[in-house]
Image (cartoon, rainbow, N blue to C red):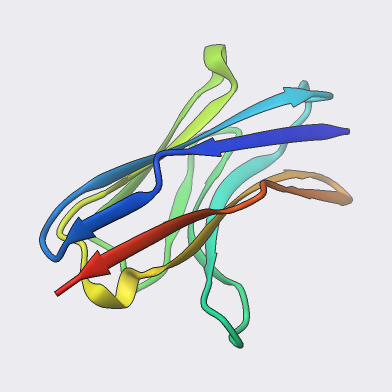
Length: 115
């Protein structure tokens, strides 16, 4: 089992920045990838950014150039730096840890961007 604890959500005005953190504990030694997803009410959860254990990253087109995902293996933590936030970034953000074939999700953190 992997437990994920997220922090860093909140409210910000458009153009502002937030940094999300997700710390993993438990059976973390062979986590393949970690990432961030987001979900609005009534919509499917969608990828925001993902980072593999070897370092490669991928981003949703809507956040490229604004968001940066990074990983501190010593702290078992993944970060999502979100700059130039837009109202359409408002969602609940969920941390994912992938340890094939299992997926582990955090509890979610709300990000609200006002215009």
